[in-house]
Length: 242
Image 1 (cartoon, rainbow, N blue to C red):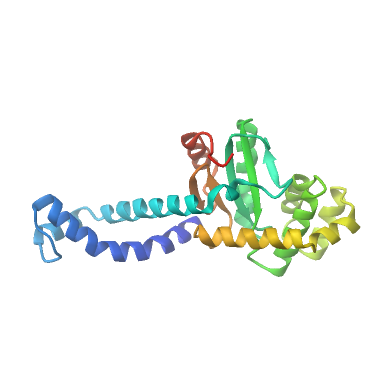
Image 2 (cartoon, rainbow, N blue to C red; image 1 turned 45 degrees about the horizontal axis):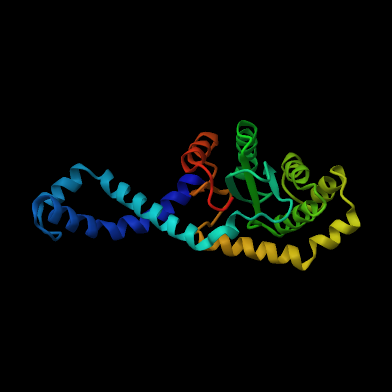
């Protein structure tokens, strides 16, 4: 998933950058410009990876701009929808869907990050993209947060497998939710507003699937693994939204 998302984002950039880089290298390296310069063409044919490098640099710059526009709200969790240290100065944001196999696979990575860093706060953002049952599970998860049992429900849902009315009910009961209250909270305006907010944030950040992460100030689309998330968190240090 990570590779396909990355390629889909980079392909349009590569197309647009081809002419730009040809012209730039011609002007900067040989004091010529334009696609007709044979030496520029030869250089690019010998070094095709430079297009990928420039595209990734441009994508990173665009991501930084999007994060700046999102502001501190991105790092402010729905009350109770947090893993790790709620007061931590390092912040990992995760957009997740309970029917997403890559999200389930990433849970162990996030748990390992929390276990390895007592200063880490993980902000969980429900992004139910895959089905109606994804939204039902997301709503119940936020209802669980309102009873102080978000993390238990979150982990139990992935343990039970793909979400369905039966697995959602089972997870809620197993973690000890007040079911009447949970059903009312799941249908509440507060939960509806939070889901709409998460969709708006994901769209503004260019995320089109789950899982998606902001590790400190570095965005990642897809299940990128423990090491990449850990390195990004260490590089960013304390998060400005923390």
